Amino acid sequence: MKNKKQTSISKDKKTIKSITWFDKINQLPERYSERSILLFFLGWALLMAMINFNARISEAHDDALYIEAAYRFVTEFPNYFYTANAPFYPMFLAVLMKLFGFKLIVFKLFNVLFLLLSVYFYFKAFFKKVPFVVLLPVMFFVSGNHHIIYFSSMTFTESMFMFFQGLLFYVVRLFLDRYVHLQHKDFKHLYKEYLLIGLSVFLLMITRSGAIVLIPTIVLFFLWIIKDKKAVVYSILSWLVFYLPYKLLIRLVFGNVSQYSNQSKILLQKDPYDASLGQEDFAGFIQRFLDNSELYLSKRFFQIIGWMNEQSTDTYGILALLMWGMFLWGSWKIYKQKHYLLLFSSIYTLGLMALSFVILQARWDQPRIIMVAMPVLLLVYFYLFYQVFHTSVFWKKVYTLLIFIFIASMMISTIKRGINNIPIVIKNLQGDIYYGYTPDWQNFLKASEWCGKNLPETAYVASRKAPMSFIYGKRKFFPIYSVIKKDPETNQSNPDSALIFFKDNKVTHILLANLRVDPTKNTGQVINTIHNILEPISKKYPESLKLIHTEGEVESCYVYEIHYPENLK
Image (cartoon, rainbow, N blue to C red):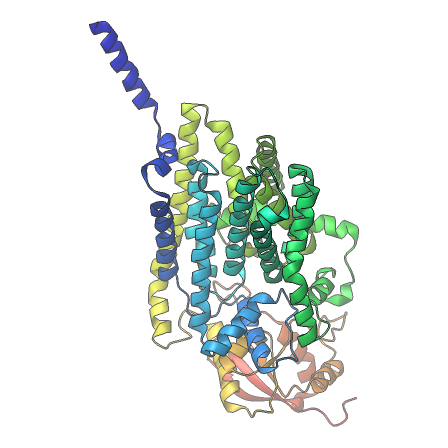
């Protein structure tokens, strides 16, 4: 009897010892309520957003472009419609501008709200749909990755877009939960879920043009996976319920405009800033896909999770191939297991990445292109690792170590940045709006402000970063994104053609900034677009450019007044 008891006790001890951290993490939803875990992630996201809050405009240009577009929606309505990208976010900012005025902090606080909403909906979508040991690192990514936190206090579209993505996945979860249990799967019994899917798809498409892949995603998912033709029809009709009235309203108010018109012209060019190089061919689009795969899957992905130096320019084709392979392998496992929610998410993400990699020129190379796809990418990767590793105690420990390193690296990076940011944001909120910028940017923005305060209302100033100048100058600036009227032999402007171009556009002044090529240090190399326009003009017509203001002693920005020659033809 004693021996039997000892055997039983020894078995219990072995069982206790065999419970790893892997198992403990997986059991957290049994120990804590869903509400408690969700509040933890919401609190973590809010804390990270607060210590990393950025009260300035970024140097990346697009966030200023959205605010300028919002201002034009308000002041030029109905004669202006934003077509540089998807229009919804600038339209949303325009509403805020009408309600609160030109309040940069208010605009940013709404993106903090979108961050919290994205955390909420990603959690609600996948909680208890995937093992918690899979969801945990993904939720730390969504709620605390420094790139996501960065965009939560910048007026970019990413926070809003990720909120809408999370909403879509949650709505698809609700739909699938009801669909699989209903005997009658017609529209009458599922109309709320179908309409929510339609609304989510509509919001995503007018927030980011690449979300157009949702239409083929829905068709493929319901035809191939669910095998329900009526579900395809109901879903598309539900989307049209929102999209058609929107298109009709836009047409009635703004005329025959499209969010895809301007974008498609630029994206079809070999060089987005130089139409003279011609249109991309089929081989060029294939090369774009390969180049972007290397850039985003072997460089930007690892920079975003903190495993690669952000200044690194190294890419690795074999690593990109491995990342594609693991994603497709994970998606195949999900398909074989009929995990419909994850499968829908992975099909959509595959389409979003493939479309982005094909249509976007590789020279743009921006982390945010891949960042919005990474929550689902990570879900698929960790789900694959879970499936491979969960059968062995040793591999469970390896998996646990992997997610601890993953979470720790993100937490350290975000907290470190937050600590460094706190003195900057305090200065900004106290009124020093230029504190935190490097001297080249300070001088450029101060010169823009000078133009707004000192030049007559009739003045029209050309600027390499016109939306940035607009934010600080509080007036419209003429945008210059590339060397105009370029001479192919010199790669500089033809002086006569450039002056005629400025005259036709009623440009009276021009900003000559010395913005660094390397933003981290002054190497003497600057963005020389304006230099290559003005140099040939100053050589042929030295009296045509009059310096009227200089901002800063080092990395200065100059304001020139243009005097057009009388004999200009």
